[in-house]
Length: 221
Image 1: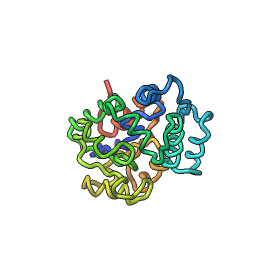
Image 2 (image 1 turned 60 degrees about the vertical axis):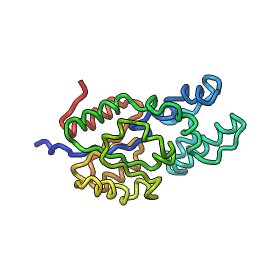
Image 3 (image 1 turned 30 degrees about the horizontal axis):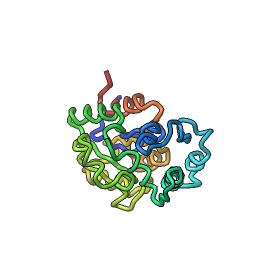
Image 4 (image 1 turned 135 degrees about the horizontal axis):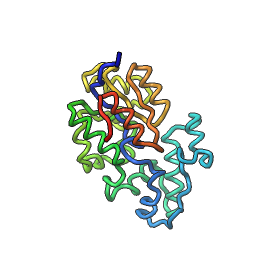
């Protein structure tokens, strides 16, 4: 017997809704006036060549530590002292936020919403990374009934309270919700709270969104 359809799709933002910074080095270089191919680190797209990323995956350092290091590195390239991890994201992506939204995300979000299901975001750093005004410049986010952001709550995934918060705001049981994240530890945390989960593969976003959509009886054409 097939399980009942899910009732809500809960998405991480960075990497799931937005393309990763690894995928948009060309846009970052253009925005900052850096020569093409200046930025070499590729994280999940070439983990063997990015020891710092591997260290984060082993949980030797946090995701925030990773991006603080990268932000400082890029700042030094520009002769500037960047002391905040969010400086890189805001300087690289401030001009046109829509260019970094995954087309697969845009389509899946519309499909889920149009079919009458709920949408929510559960992020560790949405406003912190992107700035408080960023999401207000993205019309697609108006489709979400809840945005839970640790920038404001101070509760980081995979703390169980983060998942409980989004479930409370949705007014749904954990089993009714599909959580999608590109970090395995966050998926493990959601599963421990009895949410359905999809580990998002940034190298194959279409397949990952396709897996999530099946919980709602939906498919990409």
